[in-house]
Image 1 (cartoon, one colour):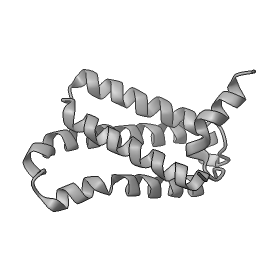
Image 2: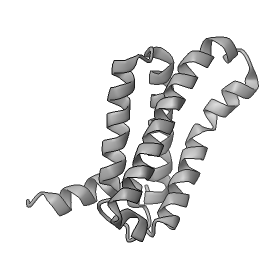
Image 3: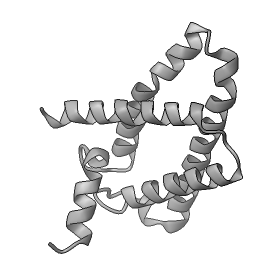
Image 4: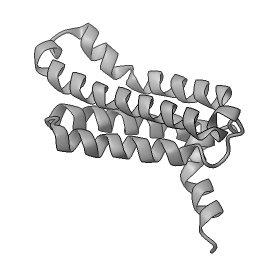
Length: 136
């Protein structure tokens, strides 16, 4: 399996897993904080390795971008959970959710391009992070 196909399959599984979690778990201050922390930490660490943008080297800009993205994800969590019971019978709503991996893939590729990241930066992040930070 080549890396491009692997990347797409991982994004599909990742996004659908989150959609199922968002529907099943009721948002409250604890779950929102946990999810915000997860998104913040993974986003912050993701751009430590393999990107060469001035924006990411400036801590203030990086903090604003990371907080904004984390808040966006928490808002999506709340919106999906609260709208699922109302709109799940509508095909347009389901198509929007089914399209989530496509939106995520496009956003990742856009971010990799804009933030001057190496190709497949996001999907290779766990491997690159371990290699850079853990001496084996």
